[in-house]
Image (cartoon, rainbow, N blue to C red; front, side, top):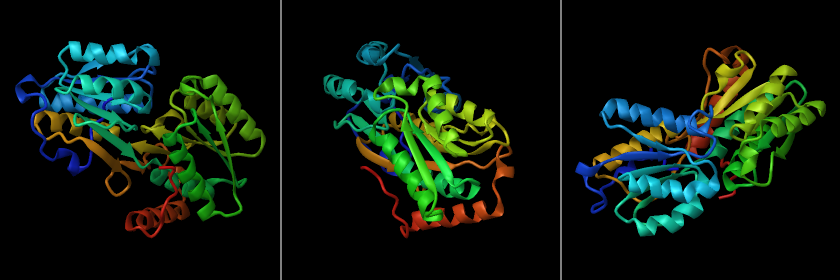
Length: 323
């Protein structure tokens, strides 16, 4: 999927790729669809914001599965797309083969890296945002046991897990962080029942805060957690509204802002290829406090998270990351 890049470096001038007159932005979602209440939907919101402000329609493609990714890319190019946003690391293989064959098209890949003069790779520092979640979870947990549920083995999921565990342990060294994966493949992002069973097991072992980073699967974990009285943590987009008063927070990745800026870079002919990393300092990730979860945030949590945020931004605290 193509994501819009937040950092100013992404807007540096690049010549020779697609003309402004032919500008046509497009988004390719994963099979979870644009209304997944998570990463895809964040991209959808950003693309619609761009469309409303610019008056330029954004074409959309929703492949049925990973084996359809190459054909979705071909459909986008055949439709005349000049700027294609790809939503997620699972597009890496398809894009690596496709982009060199279509050098007149600008591609933006979110959560993954593909080299090429016409490819912008946008990564988010999930570990930094998840560290703040860990700080809050450590203080909100009554049992001292919290859980993390990832969709599948992947570097991006490891960043969530490592940051979360470090935030918990730095705040409460005697705490226990339970971890689990829904599946060993992409099905782990689309199986709410499996995620709910993992969550159920964690709850039986004392976990009272659950942080799923598993796309649609995570909704199953949040649902069972709410039913059993645990606090939940939303991911990618703001999911606090799902269970008002029972969500600790949501760790958001500002894909909405990034994708809108990526399309604007294409429209203004300021697209730049290469890798951009967006963390707390760049406004690429954050935790959400709003009307749906504010009552959960005690003064101690507010103060501790503020301190942790400043320590990360200043470089005083280095958050572990697999990459």
